[in-house]
Amino acid sequence: MTVLTHLPFIVPRPSLRSERLQAACSYTPPSRPSSPPVFAHDHPPRLSMTDKMPAPPESHSSSASPTIHDEPGVTGPLDVSNENVPENLKEETNKGKAAQVTTAPEPREKAEDGALIVNWDGPDDPQNPKNWSKKKKWAATLIVSAFTFISPVSSSMMAPASEQIAGQFGITNSTVIALLTSVFVAAYAFGPLILGPLSELYGRSRVLQLANMWYLAWNLGCGFAQNEGQLIAFRFLAGLGGSAPLSIGGGVLGDLWRPEERGQAIAIYSLAPLLGPVIGPTCGAWIAQKSTWRWVFWATTIVDAFIQVLGVFFLKETFPPVLLERKAARIRKTMDPEKAGAREVRTVFDGADRHWKNIVAKALVRPFALFIHEPIVQLLGIYMAFVYGTLYLFLTTIPGIFEGVYREKVGIAGLHYLALGVGLTGASQVNARMLDKIYKYFSAKNDVCTFTNTPLQPP
Image (cartoon, rainbow, N blue to C red; front, top):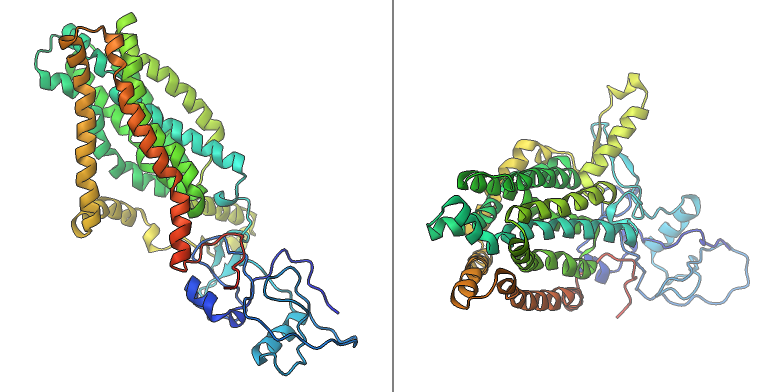
């Protein structure tokens, strides 16, 4: 009796799948019977044959028939001589004796034009960011969260020192004083339009770290500003680089974690931009009281430089098209130089949509198209504009209220920002930690097939 014990799991051929599994996963069988199934996600699930087969009669003959171990729904050997077994199952079983059953798509496939298509080396390819170890995933997540934390810190840290800056530069207009703080956030509206497309062309890690170095340089320059014009200009330029983690960080988490695993990662990532406007002014108030306002910028520059060093070592590239393009480049180098020029090597992501003109055009048009045509985006956009405007209205007025009206010192007045942190942190953490449970609940309720290593159990 032939026993298929060398496979960790068996993915059924399209002809053997039950109707229930096809409906749940919305699976369309491939046109070529020899090709394994292609799933919407890059990690095929561990599936099982849930259709109950009639138990074959016990036989003491030595005829060879395959046995599938540790598979739910299959309780014994499949006797293809049994007349109750469907004909298509007999045919596939007989073919399985002569050909090895594969569990993943081939990493290199031939296209109709003869090109070599580069893909992941199966569902467990260690180069795929979703298959990285937990330690490596969390290292990248924490680095991105740290980038996302330091940018909002800089956006609000100078708020308690704004009166001190106004006195040194002779600024009397309250609007200009508030602009010193809020102009950093104004750059958030423009930075993602440039940095988003660049991250899809050159990768997340490279753009994140270069943008952070841009922010570091201009934030350092803010500490050397000699007039209000220089300070406002340097703050705006620093905000362009500081917008990268907020616009690209979510993409990094999407590259690393599967939908049902993202809740805990989002809990950490979403905490950073909320704690930044709270910790920043609190620390900035004590720095302004004990030292000079210039150290507000120099202190954040020192912390950001430390985060940048960690990012160089622990933040690796996570964007699949860029990773596969690097893999394709390595394959081109190993090919025969005489044949390499005659045969095209491309990834599964290569196409007209990957051209830089299309990526930039989509990035520029997509936000406005979504806002115009999607009511839910309009609702959330207006709500977030109101919330963010109210938040920075608090950040810029708290120092004046508690220092001017209640005669508190700068450091003591800065402690009032902690009240914002309690509410923001509590609400975000409760919401983020419920995401996994809510996702799994509605996936099960609507029979959505989530691609994990857990087998589908029969009803």
